[in-house]
Image (cartoon, rainbow, N blue to C red; front, side, top):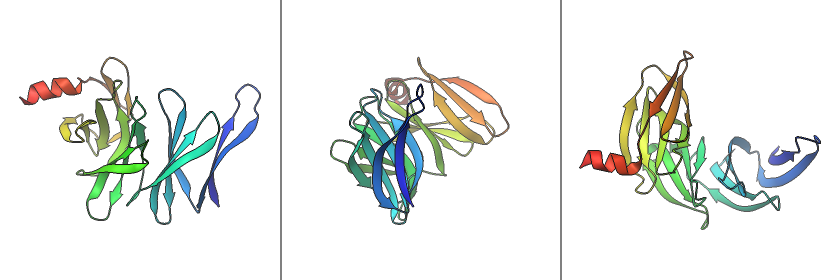
Length: 193
């Protein structure tokens, strides 16, 4: 009845308990590793809303837990490890992207978005966040936390994957995968001016 996290050693098959989230009745929505592998970010749904749990992967302990005002779904960690972005729902704003400062363990911004945000990924350099918004991909600047663009792909989108050198892959529920070449935040700023 608790959401525990464990590590399975692939070669030996040994199971090791990492951390007890200490939240009764919680369920895990998503897991993401920091770029250096030192932190594991766990999105939890609890009776009182969403939480982000930060786990030290070396010592296998919970470092901090950040309670969100609303729900939590997909998460993405900035490559520098300082911010985590999360999809969710807020009673006042509706659909949101929540921005969490990892070091201070607090929510630093809650950005209202249209539609229902799903499948959140960051570009390779971390300057831009991409999330599915029904049949479009919304583009958010990770510095200003503003929605800077929408990309229409066609079809009801299911999920995204970000690759190196500005590649973004979008899959729809019909089984089609579209490869997109996307720019950096500086490119979008140039286009806007």
